[in-house]
Image (tube, rainbow, N blue to C red):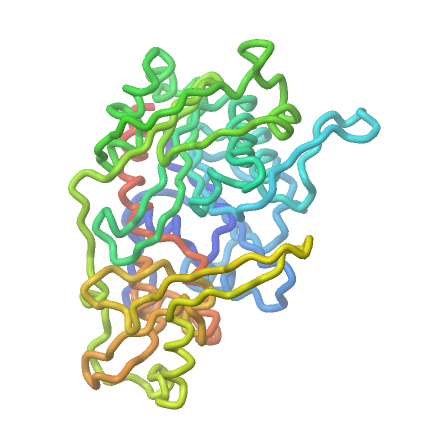
Length: 417
């Protein structure tokens, strides 16, 4: 089976960098993984400048198969056949309902990009999928915990897939950022890989010993477990997506598997966790003055980073207290960086501030350090976009090194097909 990939919501190419161990040599990209990216889509709604797409094209070349269009306007049958579908999609409300007329059956909430993924899967039926999202996905929304993820699982079940998931903190597997993301791997039931899983009856043992994520991220399993169904196994279960949307609740743990509508979820911790410190990726020379924090701004930064308790009012008029603990100021260079957000480098509680090695002054991280936190090659986003957008891209990106670890397992799985 060929290693053909379609990349959705491609950003600046994190999945491709990770799978193909992409490097920059004299501003030219060298790809070593052998994954053939046959189609990619990136579209930033509401923006005139499509900086992420421009970066993707700068690094991987212009092609009719590098598409800068709203995915909802793309004819799904025009997407090339592929072995692996990848993408990091927005976390949204995935509620579904019956159409008012009843003629169209079940309708997903408009504008939610999950339904675009589902439409592609229904049209192209790729053997494998690897998707990424924020870790809160498996607990959303707060009023009906686990509903959104349950809708995703049931959708993939109805489309004929087995699903595995795991929340991975990159810092626990040798990387320099404490970035927690949920990774979702789906395999079509007629693949050799899926058939091997279907032959097993003990989902718990599958999760512990034979799942793809366990090979990529060895773990120590704990006793917190949950079993549930999300299909129509009995009259008390869920006949369709509307039933899931209306009634499903589940306290999903940080790893799990779904086979034939049966769910087994288990809490895990990494085996022998190791991390890289920020000091190991830090620039050491004296930097441009724009990265250093002026003395006049230090009090503002201290206030943002400090503990606070604020009285706020709910929409119904009820008062409540909002509390935040203090953050290290400056950040510790002998620890991995915190999770980067799109607001990185602004006067913001979440922005990193370090003591500069060369001058001892407090400063922001540089765009190059932001790229290193996500394992991108140095200068990846240095394509002419404004410096503020370079930080924004990295706040939206994934840790490419995590994708590289998964890619090794996927390569072995696909080679056996």
